[in-house]
Image (cartoon, rainbow, N blue to C red; front, side, top):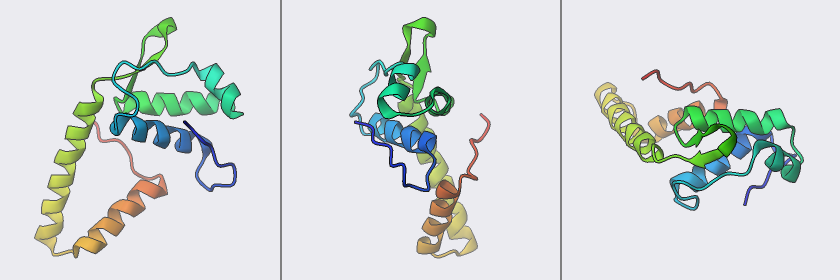
Length: 125
């Protein structure tokens, strides 16, 4: 179930993207699951079609969903690949943190700030 908090400082598209990403990563939404159409979900949540479209585009760019034209959008099997890439990036980050002597708690704050500030950008493959 997706819930949008209109009082949250987090934009609705990001709330939607994050909730879908979490459900995909924790396997609540299994590989191959068909997502609601953008229009249908927008109507159900009381959001603009462009807001839902942006969330779907970001999920697709992250490899978590795939759009098959008029057939709709589906949970992608490449989500596992995305998780592996994230694990590799985390391992590399941990090595950098250790080499420059930053405290692990500070390293986590740095990551949290990057994730919540909206400034984190996808690395090019």
